[in-house]
Image (cartoon, rainbow, N blue to C red):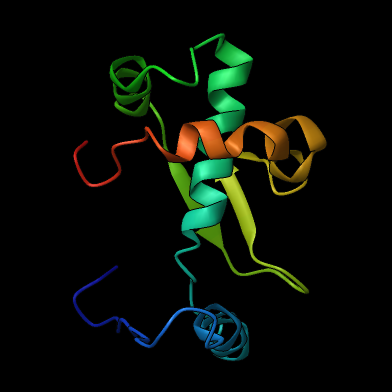
Length: 112
């Protein structure tokens, strides 16, 4: 984000609707919503495609060093890109959904 951009943080208790509100604000103002769930799904997809063990934090961290996840506003939903390729639909496939919880416990976001 550029120096003139804004960032909005929404705080509150679990199940209060923070993500719902954030997505609506982002859509309305064409902001990027940092969707961590989509990020975990994207990492899961790439790991599956490359044969990286989903339960190996070190291997996932190494893979992340060579991974670009970006978001772009879309209608009706935000678009997700993995290394420049649109994976918005691919990250919602059943095989990714069935494996994302394994990856989510081991991906060191913020450490790469």
